[in-house]
Amino acid sequence: MPDRDDSVRLGPDEALLRLVEGNRRFVADEAEHPDQTVSRRAFLGGSQHPFAAVFSCADSRVPPEIVFDAGLGDLFVVRSAGHVLDHAILGTLEFGVDQLGCPLLVVLGHTGCGAVRATFQVVSRHTGASGTDIDTLVEAITPAVVDAGRDGVDDAHLVDAAVRHNVERVVAGVVAAPLVAPAVARGAVLVVGAVYDLSTGVVELVVTPRSGTSPLVTPRMAT
Image 1 (cartoon, rainbow, N blue to C red):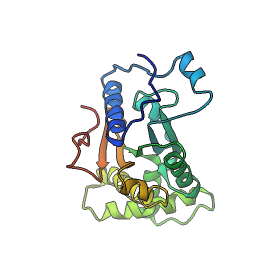
Image 2 (cartoon, rainbow, N blue to C red):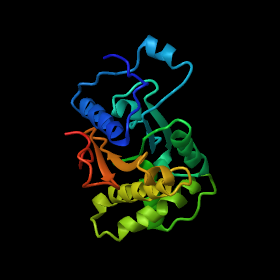
Image 3 (cartoon, helix red, strand yellow):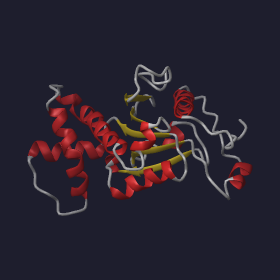
Image 4 (tube, rainbow, N blue to C red):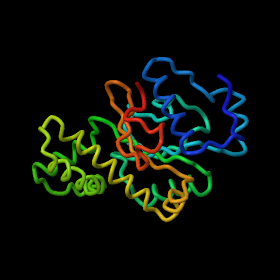
């Protein structure tokens, strides 16, 4: 597959479609591994023009470049356990929008998230703080776990329900960021939330601010 032409700047819907198609190829075991040539590496030595920013969990089973069948210079990736949002990460995402011109921001959670599961155990057992920096993660994810507990889902699905709530909360935080909000308002940037299924490889869109108005915003990224 030829390298991407970075001079052709993608709009939000086009960027989302590219991710949709990449995830479809990954799920179908038809990955093309684009933009991974020696010439692509040399070309990117002077600048970068990623077509999407992805904020995902740090889980080793969820590498965005592989999940979306992307390559060098395609995705501006930020990761933390449980995709917990802090000032450094928010600033990084704002840099992606303001300085790199990313037209799409994706908050990517995943099924069976260990950080969410650990938080659920702390909340359900009413255990105290550990006294480590992990407490920062638990504190950030706790509201999503509480929200999931109010959904009335069975115990087997509580963690994944909390994962979705966590994605929703992080998306809300990203959309409200000072350098993101105006870009979203003028239609230059689209912010979506998604969940990756560890078993199937499918990425499902769960937060789509423009759902129903764009043919590219579908319930599942890969079919």
